[in-house]
Length: 141
Image (cartoon, rainbow, N blue to C red):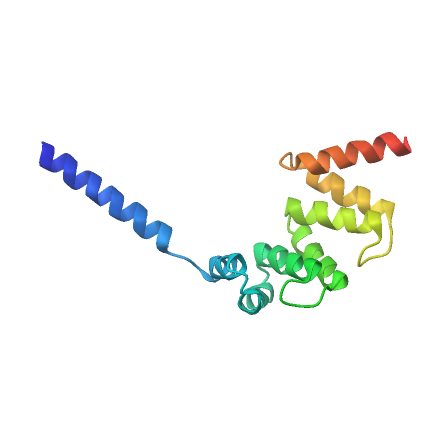
């Protein structure tokens, strides 16, 4: 019985380890970004953005927004956040809303601010968006 349990535990350990070491291109971009190898992250994520990869759109958007490995480009960040926001990415929705609120990379537009904050808040997993939406409603109602 002890041998069976030992083999079972060994098999589980091997399987769980092998699953955590398997990475795809997006994860390779995350790894490069964490190592501050922004050029590699940009190259990887650009290829994924062309395929409509939502998480890569957000990751690349933040690199453009903060100027990591590339000059700051708020317009390109807004374009990428818009792609992801329209696919339902709450962080992209919230970030884009704040860009519209402040007129960063896009014209100031409270209607768009409200639209994207509402999208993020309605998904229920963005407390920041819910808070910002509440503040906005309090100020304008």
